[in-house]
Structure formats: structure tokens, C-alpha cells
Amino acid sequence: MPATSLLDAREGRTQTDIVAGIAKMQFREGKPPRQSDLDDLLPVTKGAISNNCGKLVDTGLVRERDDRRYEIVEAELLSLYREHVDRYLARESASGRFEEEVAAYNETRTATKRGLREMFEDNDLLLDILVAALVDGLDDSRIQTIREVMLHADQLVRSAATHIVTHPDFAGRDDPAWDSVRPLLQLAVALDRVHEGLDALADAHADVAEYFPGDTPAATIATYFTNNA
Image (tube, rainbow, N blue to C red):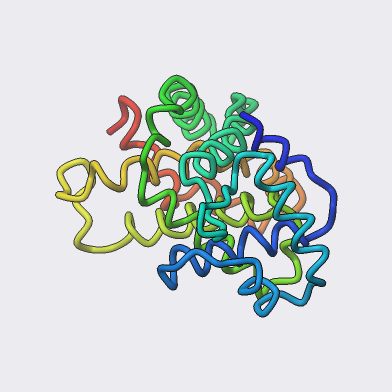
């Protein structure tokens, strides 16, 4: 898809701010912006906004309507995040301390890769996470590029999944919300690649090593997608 090139863009944060500004007005305020609205919102020159709006339209991520308002193409935003996730679905290396956990994660990654397109198609929950990640970027100087927006979305996915599975009312596969939250939980497992770092940390600090492995929300999530459930 044309929009996937935005994952590798290194043009600074102007385009990122513009996409975020459109997302804020389109999804939070209910009215896609005209260029003049973006001029008022963003600390960017009118010329830069005009130039970059045109570039974003060329990618397919943004379209300009007949009334001269700009809006994000939802399917393209989801496609962009799907491409980002696909880059992280390689199997994780074996780990002595986390052997069973890594095996479960790799099983989930394989299943996720097979069903990735279906998982992202018309997924309102993932779309809302992407909008939240974009809007957060307006006030976070650390988020400079679209790729960094996607990495922030990964954090939101993992944080949301942790809150869900640790809530006392969540009933796992039997929960009424299972079908809605399943993609979120599955992504949280697929994107979690910390075990090599945890192994190194345990090797360096004996007082930490005794607690690895332990019961974590991510390990609990993994059991929902493997034969260990």
C-alpha cells in the first residue's frame, strides 16, 4: 500500500502533526478540518501545511473532500499499522528461563501472521487506539515520526491488554467482550519481545533473577491463544 512508505519517513514531525491534527478534529471533534483549521492548530507555517497535506493525499492515507476538508482514510490507517505489526512477527529466540512462555508467544505470532489482514479489517477498537496514539503525539515531543506513533500505539495495546486481563471481572474466553478484545490481547502477545533482555538482566543481577520467570499479565494473555489455556 502507498501509505506504508510513511513508516520509513524521516522528514521530521510536520507530517505527523498534520495527520494527528486531522485525527483530532475528525474523530474527537466530529468534523474533518480545512487547511485553515490546521493552520490555527499547529505551530507550522501555512506553506508547510499546504505542501505536506498534498504529500499525504498522494500516499492515500489522507484524502481531500469536495468541500476542501481533509480526512484520514480509516482503512489506510489500519493498513499502515498492520504493516508495522507485520515487521515484528518474526519468531523470538529460545530462552532458558522463559522456554514455555516464548514457545507460547511464538505460537501466537504464527497465528497472528496468518490472520493479520482479517484482524485489522474494519477493527474499530484498533482504529481508536491509533487515533489516541496520534492525538497523544501532538503534546509529546518524543513522537516525531509516523513510525513512533505506531510504537506508541503498541504501548497502548499492551497497557490496555494488561488492564483487561488483570481486572477481577474479566472471564477470559468466556467473557462477553472476548470477541472484541481478542485482537487486542493477541497483538499484546505478538508485540512483546522482552525475553532476551530479561535473560540478560537476570544474568547480571542475581537478586532479580530469582523472580524470573513469574506470573505476568502478558504470560496470562498468551495462554488464551495456545493449548496451555
